[in-house]
Length: 260
Ligand code: SF4
Ligand code: SF4
Ligand code: FES
Image 1: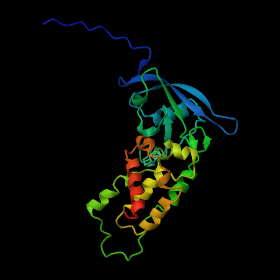
Image 2: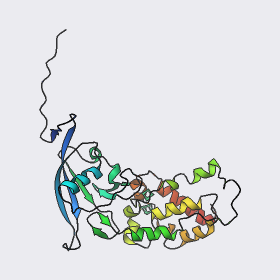
Image 3: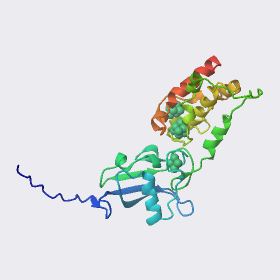
Image 4: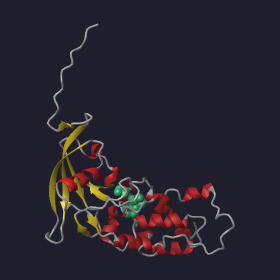
């Protein structure tokens, strides 16, 4: 048996070898929309050269920039595991969670990743937006369980089939990816927005909740479900894969028939 001579491969200019473990790093440019209200009149782009593993997440890349290149870079993140919903941002023009987005899914070696704040909310600084209007809409739907009946001895029983009705909506992490990708919300900030409607759905379709009628009345106001034009932006943006537009349609039908 003859042995085939394997030509040594030369790394491409975009790839470098990390010292330990043979991990391949890719060179990237990260273009970030920056805004510091203390010195800037308007936002401007700044580009950072970084090296990252293809399996790194965008939040790792942003941390790297903040820790080693520009400590002023401002953005939110907390759990870094897709649970707290605090690091929604526009990555390559699409709303995503920075901690759930891998480098390899948004850029090739030598490529550029763009990062901007989510739209429709006031930018406080860099990628940090004022979330108050978003949470005001959340509060407006009464996001708490209402049941004045005396508690049963054991539990407020809910069947599996009834629990299934709110299975999608109870997955929401309030990240705002949906609401800030909605063109109706961009032009009319008084629209409660898809996230608030998903949260309302969670209680409207909870068989144990007794405030269904009140909730449907809120949804029926001119800031509620009828503003939705079924454009599906929200569904595409949701990192939890919640079928938002379908849930909005369910709420619309419940309002029309005044039942859930
Ligand atoms: S489906 Fe409705 S809520 Fe979702 S983005 Fe479109 S208009 Fe907005
Ligand atoms: S419905 Fe999805 S996109 Fe909207 S806030 Fe909840 S988790 Fe985020
Ligand atoms: S940091 Fe918590 S969801 Fe990304």
